[in-house]
Image 1: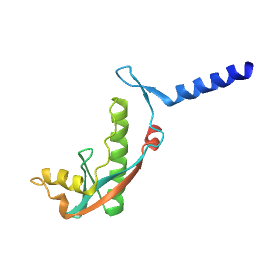
Image 2: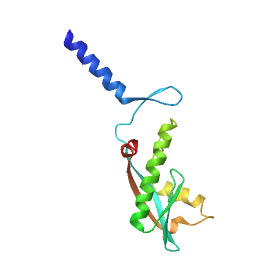
Image 3: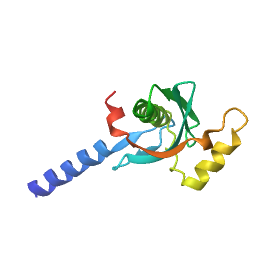
Length: 130
């Protein structure tokens, strides 16, 4: 009987650890796997790499291609953390066709579709510690 109570107690502690209260007081389960890959467009302009992440409507830039990818990863991670703090769900990553359609909607500003379309992997758990 004592062992059963101890196991139930451990189970309750584990459930509490996995639960998170959102802003509106509803209890939601934390996502166990918080890794995702989001499409991003990178296009050179005037010596810098401009980045557009359509699923979050993020714009950022980098000095070179590697820096641009790192900046995109950081921007997605920090935006995802803000979504979580506000009780919003992370958007599902778009496929290539959806990403191109979203980029074409903002074409009048700058045509990102003429650059690279890549996937940026993000581990949102790394941003929980920031």
